[in-house]
Amino acid sequence: MSNMLTLIDKSITLLQELIRIPSLSREEADTAHHIQRYLESYAVKTHRKGNNIWAYNRFYDAAKPTILLNSHHDTVKPNPGYSRDPFQAEIIDDKLFGLGSNDAGGCLVSLIAVFLYYHEQKDLRYNFCLAATAEEEISGLNGISAIVDDLGRLDFAIVGEPTLMDLAITEKGLMVLDCESQGVAGHAAREEGVNAIYEAMPDIEWFRTFRFPKESESLGPVKMSVTQINAGSQHNVVPSTCSFVVDVRTTDAYSNEETLAIIQQHVRSSVKARSTRLTSSFIPKDHPVVKAGTALGRNTYGSPTMSDQALLRIPSLKLGPGDSARSHMADEYIYVYEIEQGIPLYIQILDQIVH
Image (cartoon, rainbow, N blue to C red; front, side, top):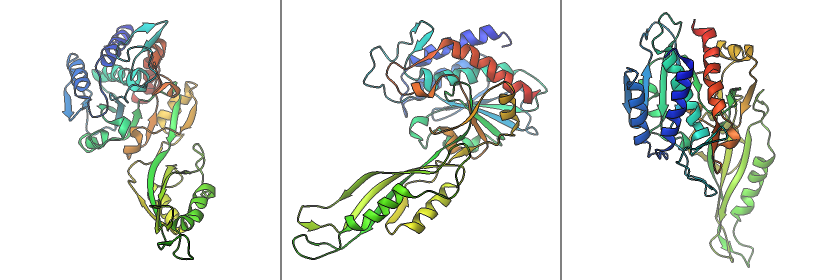
């Protein structure tokens, strides 16, 4: 697979084929099968668990460090505003339209091309592990987290998401908190009870105004938003409980567990996290892959959107063709030239560290 133009052309064709196969989260079996057959057509030995496909370079050496190349093949449901068939995969004026074209099909086929480019090469300083994963859009348990322990030792990851081929070196994590304040029920017409809504108000105000002492250099402050609230059963009863939900976007300044502990120290309401598994991601600016990218003039930034990086516990970089602003939009598209330029750029970055 040394002919770059052939590699690029086949990648664009593969993306069109994948767009034409519906692959909503949890329903990715057909795209998984197609990706597996595509890799095997190049004599790549593949592994499959659920709807996740992974493979290693031919001259894999367990004594060497390993780079994970990861992107996903599931999609969200089509936006109701679509004016064209989301599964048609048309190319019009250099735009390849279709559900999942930008998020993250263009990244996926580009990373598959990069993997094939290196697959037959000997004497590389690093191994490559390619993982085409499921359920990214829902952070599902049957996505990358279901196979990460099967992949072996991984030293760092390039996660394919649309970044305009700039380097997202940090990414916000997520915690959803279920909070509840306690009161005492009573009749609203008399001076009875303790109103749980009033008990919740100081805590809600704290979530609105508190700033964590440490802030991330690239992501800024931890962001907390009260997004749901529920209390009361009828107009004349003082409510005994008030529940509310808080969306917390965490940064590399604190772990999710540290963030939760600080919150619990400051509010009177009970606070329970639905999960702490979706962590903030970080890779140092002096990491070889970051230095390789910046040497080619690529910018670094902190990403507010979440990806499978949140489920990895290794340094990871989010990088790919396409524009995050187009993700989940009606009539989603990726420019063909973004893939044509993205594949060689991935390789130019990696060539600096694998040879």
